[in-house]
Structure formats: structure tokens, C-alpha cells
Amino acid sequence: MNYKDLANLIFPDVKDISYYEEKYPKRNLKEGAIVTRFAPSPTGFVHIGGLYQALIARKVATQTEGVFFLRIEDTDQKREVENGITDIVNSLKDFGIEPDEGMINETEEKGNYGPYKQSLRGDIYKAYAKYMIEIGKAYPCFCTPEEVEEIRKKQEAAKVRPGYYGVWAKCRNLTVEEMAEKIKAGEKYIIRFKSPGREDRKIKHHDVIKGNVTFPENDQDIVIIKGDGLPTYHFAHVVDDHLMGTTHVIRSDEWLSSVPLHLQLFHEIGFKAPKYVHISPIMKNDNGNKRKLSKRKDPEAAVSYYAKEGIPGEAVKEYLLNIANSNFENWRRQNPTEDIEKFDLQLNKMSVSGALFDMVKLLDVSKTVISRFDAEKVYNESLKWAKKYDEELTNILKEDKEYALKVFGIERGNKKPRKDIAKWSDVKENIEYMYDELYYAKTKEYPYQVINKKDDIVKILDLYLKKYYDENADKQEWFDKIKELSGELGYAKEVKEFKANPDKYKAHVGDVSTVLRVALTGRTNTPDMYEIMKILGKERMAKRFEEATESL
Ligand code: GLU
Image 1: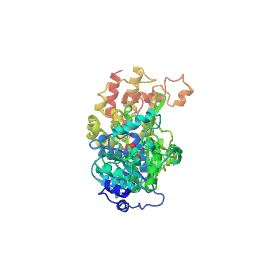
Image 2: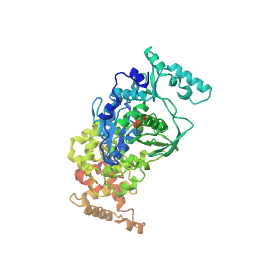
Image 3: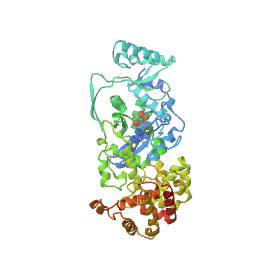
Image 4: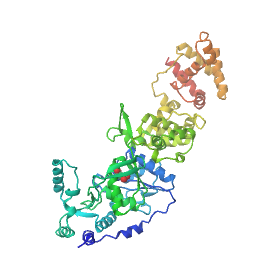
């Protein structure tokens, strides 16, 4: 009896690995092309950190004319939820991340290196596990969970490292005959890797983000095939990323400490190891303490949060690039309208310790991103959001699209577009004063500023409508009229003039404008008042001034 016989006894029906090696040939890509993947478990929750990894992986693959694929890691079937894969696919899509290969819904996939769902790859893992046994690098282990627990207790008492290794690895030294006998007798077993490592030796490794790291060698005989016949993460990682031709494993840095094991597995099975890119978690400043974004504590940890809030995928993506590479901000300043695809992301410039996630900054980025959208896009996106979350807004937007486009068009499409919308859930509040049904339904406090006496306000509003408002005026003429109005009522026509002679005037043209703005919209801050007036028209203005006057 030799290793080969043992392997045949354990896996009588699996194919030789040469079959798979031929079936999945080396990818024919240009020199330097990077092949990456996103490999989540379908647990029903996509974390912003996962999206971040996927974005980075997609980006570097695109940049190098490589391939990015989606692999579903469902070997821990206890954690699975219904529609878990579709959730992942749709979440990526919401952020414009489209894999070149991989699962596209619960059951279908695209690409030539599948199946892209691990639970469908059972025969492949078995073939490679069989090969490992044949070459003497894996063995069946008959220890029951109780025995393994027993070993752990002894290790604890002896104050040595826990695990299945060296002298503790009981089954490692069984003879092939003994193993075969146990199998024939029907004893249960799992398959373990036969580690050649020694804990007192060190390995040096270069991680693309973390740089040079040194670890003790792995000496654990880890499980590669579990009792349910499925592989462990470690073994599936090695087999899949080998067969699928991954060049760069981009994953969370919680896996960094497994690198010695993974490199050893690649080496022992005889495959070229990929490069490792361990991404630090996204951090949050919590009252001065830097901590990981937590699924439990932080709603913004779930990617579903952004859709609910109506923060555009483009904005989240742009913000994530911001925290990925600190030179992004500079690039954006120099290329304010360029597609982010043009930005050259560098993996080795990513943060070693964990990028800080700042919601205020994200919303700021979002304002700028939305400011670059045209009115039609703002309309469509707001409506899409509203249809899910706000019926009133949906009705308003649908009732008169032409009018809505005018409203969204205020100060848009010019050199310095308005930046007042950070998320679609802000839209209603933002355009409220352009819709009478919303405007009058609200009880308003008119926040008058410098000019705040009833008489003064009434005079300004009256005279403006009677004498100075001209619907056909262009913007310059329109403003000149407000100056004239100011002059007639004893206010300074120029701010400069007012500053030079503050005692001579009650206030200046800016203060007069504020009165008009507040009476018209109920607020001190709006985009361009000239455009607002044009869209509202004289009749509606008059009605608003009337209401404003009455409430004085
Ligand atoms: N399924 C693993 C996880 O979600 C994937 C890690 C990897 O990308 O290799 O943590």
C-alpha cells in the first residue's frame, strides 16, 4: 500500500488534476494584466469594506486590462441566506461595479473559469485533495472533535501553542496501512495538510500594501477537507485562485496572518502563489477613538444605507477612491470633470493602518458629484429614489417634469454649479419653496436679517413689485433694478458705498435682496434669485409677498 493506493481508497471517483489543469488554461492576457476577484460569502449583508475591496479590485483589473471576477464563497452553509448572491450582485451594480466573470444571480454565471460558486466545486477540491494525498502532503485524520478538544486541553495545561501540529498531530504518523484499515472499518475522517513547516523558522514576505512582513513558518496540519466533504477557506483559496488565474489576492487584512500557511500550501502543491494585497479596515473616529466601522453600531457600515439615504453610487465610489489614495484629491482638483476611471489607482499607496471614513466629507464629495449632473439626471435619480422612499416627492416630480427640470436647472450646467444637494433625500427640502403645495403647507418663520422692521419690509416688497420687477429683464438689468429700488428707499446701492459711509445709510442693496429672498422663499440661502423669480413668475411672487406681509 502506498500514498496512491490510499488516495484511491479515499477518493475513488474523482478526476485527475490534469483534467482541470487543461480545462482551465493559463489566461491569455497582455503582460502586466492583473486578475483580481471579490470573494464574499452570501450572508445577506454587504459591508462598505467589502464594497471598497471590490472597487479597488475592479479598478486595478481595468487599469491593467486584466480581469475582475465575482466568486461566491458558500462553503459555510450555515451562514447562508436566501437571495444572498443576488444581493451582492445588485449592490455592486448600484455602485457601477460590474465583474467580467462570475455569478450573475443565484444560479447563473458568466466566464470560462467556473463554477464561480464554491459549493458547486466539490469535485474539483476533492481532485486536488486526492493529489495532495498522492504526493504525501495530506492525510486522513481520524481524531474526533472530542479528541481534538482533549489535545487542546493538554496543550493549555502544558502552556504550549494550541493546534494540530508536530507531536500533537496524532494521525500524521499513522502508516498508510493503518489509515487504510481505519477507513475500511468505517471510521470517520477529515483530510489534513501535512505541513513541512517549523515554528522556529521565519519566512519573509512582501505584501503589496503592508510591505515586508516576517512571520514564523506555519507548522499546523490544518484541515483542508471538512467532514461535510467541503473544503476549508484555506484550501479553497489555493485551489480556486490557482485555477482561476488570480494574480493579486485583494482581501481584508484579517487574513494577513494566514499568509505563511497559504504560501506554504501553494508551495507544497506546486503552484505559483499570487501576490497578496491586504486591505486595512475602514475606520471611524468615534469621539476621538479610531475604531473599525462596525456592522452593529454604524448604519453606514452597510452598503444598503447609501441607497436608502439616496447618496449616489458615483459619490460613494469617488469618496472611497479619496480614502484609498491620498493623491486622488489633488488629481480631482486638477481634473474636476474627468471620469474617475481615468485616475490611476496605486495599490502600494494605500493606507497600511486603515483609512478613516468621514461622513461629512463623503456628503461634501457627494454635493460636488451631484453638482456635475445635468438637470435631467438629477430629475431621474431623485425620482428613482422617491419611488422607493417618498410618495409625495414622487407625485410632485411626476406631475410636471418640464417644471421640475427648470427647478433643477437653476444654477446648473455653468462653471460654478450649485452644490446644495448631497443626497436624494435632501431634494424635497431643497426644492420645497419652488412648489406652492409644499411651500404653503409649511408654517414658516421668516428669517429677516438686517432689515427686519415691518414698515421697511412692506415698503420694499410693495415698491419692488409695482415699479421695479420686470419679467423680461436680463440678469444685469434685474439686479440694476434692485439697486434702484434700494436707492429710492434710502439704502446704499453698492455695498462698497455703504462700507465707506455706514452712517449715511440704513442698510445696503444686499440687505434689500435678503428681504426679497426671505419673503419669496422663507429662507436666507437659495440658489440664484433671478432664476427663481423667473420660474415662479410675477403672479406667484405677488402671492408670496402678500403672505409674507400678512405674517408680519
Ligand atoms: N470569503 C472570504 C471572506 O469573506 C474571502 C476572503 C478572500 O477574499 O479571500 O472573508
